[in-house]
Amino acid sequence: MIEIKPVTSKRERNIFLTFPWRIYKNDPLWVPPILSEKAKVIDPARGLFFRDGCAELFIAWKDGKGRHGATATPAGFFPGVPNFNEVLIHLNGLRHPWDYLRYLRYRNTKPKCIAIKSVVLPPEYWDTGVAILLFDEMAKRASARGYEWADLSLTGESNVDTWPLAHHMGAQMYKRYRFYKKSL
Image (tube, rainbow, N blue to C red; front, top):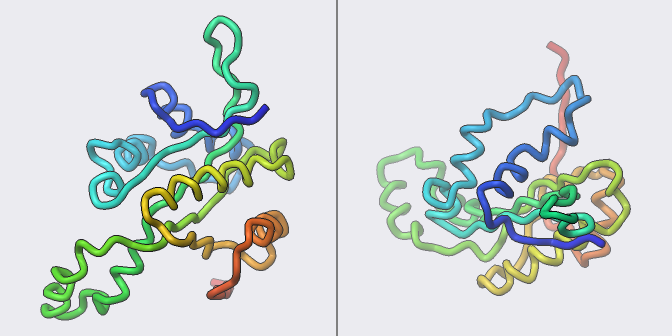
């Protein structure tokens, strides 16, 4: 059984932080992040999203808690953050001194959208419904906090796994990105 639970302890926060190593350990192109920097981001006392927005960390657990306190294997995570682009779009790139005055006007604007930029699941959990469970839990909590929609904007057209998930969840395309390549 898969359960979606919030991260509540230091131990679970460490599991959340180190989870990508489990997925990408054999990928020769993966560059691991600096853990101390990532730890600051998800620390409620220091993290920007906890200070200026809201954030909650979740892990999908397979088979709950094991016997004698042994914890089961995490099955994925699904980071979502307030879409600060809703504020930044009004600031003209902060290119001129008066743009900072405009910042004062919009600084307390609460985004209506939560931005979801990745779904992280080990291959053995692809096509199992774990991503849908994670999205559903996030949608419930985001809605309860006043968010009206979710931005899945980094979903590429060639991503054969995420497109069906997005459409299954009722997502609609509202913008399109293109990727260009140039030899150096």
